[in-house]
Image 1 (cartoon, rainbow, N blue to C red):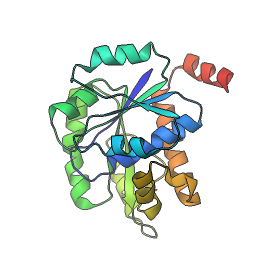
Image 2 (spheres, helix red, strand yellow):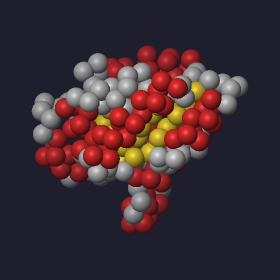
Image 3 (tube, rainbow, N blue to C red):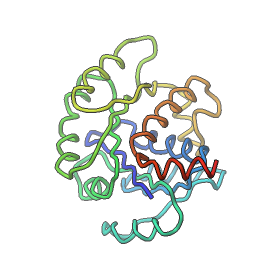
Image 4 (cartoon, rainbow, N blue to C red):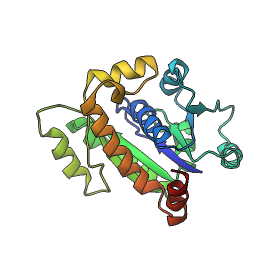
Length: 215
């Protein structure tokens, strides 16, 4: 089982939206998914509670000693555990990063968000974890997202698609769904982001071969 943690020390970056939509994409691709919500706001867990499909599981965390819990999940047949973290440098955020195989750092394409991203990068690098960036809440018909992608590319890999600021994402988070079910453009961008994340977390040829056989 691989662990994908979504983290950014700055609030409002779209962490829960990323986590939920990546989970749906992975589940639709045939992966067995379980979620862990370490954010006290429990946005991801709230989304999961409203979800009508039973294609994604959620584990309630009773303590921050996650290593043993992750080991148990690994032996339960899950392919991917997606962890949502709070927008701070708390023990919850650090715990989520410490168990990650890959950290996705979402960021809005604004100057304040980009200037603050260094704090998150430092925290992830201190834990010795691999990370990638995803631009979120990009404004349609502007080049801010592409400028942000260019700026972040100097620090690490950036997803080739930008998650735009669309009402369909907000609606999906409010009803346990995915924006891709009603919005073709959202479906295209989140699919590209998932393909990018998948390539960066499932690196071993053995795992890729396994998934091909299952498909």
